[in-house]
Length: 179
Image (cartoon, rainbow, N blue to C red):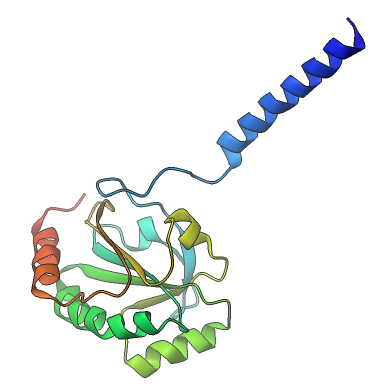
C-alpha cells in the first residue's frame, strides 16, 4: 500500500473515531421542545447543601424550572409572582426549581432569595450546565413541566406567573394523574 493511501486511511479512521466519540460522549444536542421530556440535571440545593437532580427530586410534581441570576433585574421583578403561585399551589404538588447561574458564592444567592422572602427551592449551578442543556437565550427563562417531567410551556424573559391564565394552567396540570 502506498504511503498516500495509508495517510488517507488514517485520516478517515480518525474522523470515524471522532464522530463516534462526539455522538457517544458529547453534549445532548436534542432540542428543548414543548411535548418532550425535560433534560435531567444535577445542581446544589442551597437550603440543604445537597446535590439534587430534576428527575429524582421533583418526580411526580408539576415543576417550574426557572433559570435566573442575582444580577438580573427582570428576574427580581418576576420572583414575587412565582412565590405567590408557589404558596397557593405547593400543597397540591407544585414545585419551583429556581436555578441560579451566578458564578459567585452560594451565600450571595441565599441572601438574594432571603431578601425577597422566597420559600421555594433555590438551586445553584455554578458550572452553567443547565443553560446549556436547556438552550437558554438569557435570564430569566422558565420551563413549566407536568408531573411526568414533560415540557408544557417555555417562557423567555420575566413573566407574571400568578396571572389567571398561569394559575389555570398549573391547576389543570395538578389535576392530571402522575406518572
